[in-house]
Image (tube, helix red, strand yellow):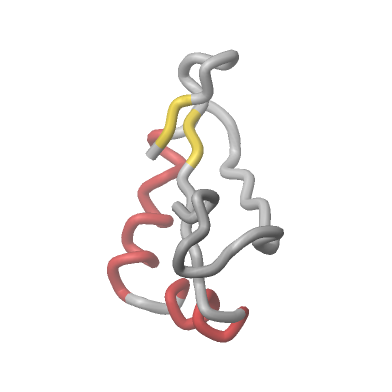
Length: 65
């Protein structure tokens, strides 16, 4: 979990999945459904989800998370 430096109180979570199917499978797990179901009461604004792709990578990459 990260808090944006220029937007205190705004948080970002980065997750990496093998592919879209793995991401969708993750969304169907009981713990994620439970967590997402509780977010409306915790958030000041609706949840925004961004999807992207890694531009750099590899086992020895300094860009790896």
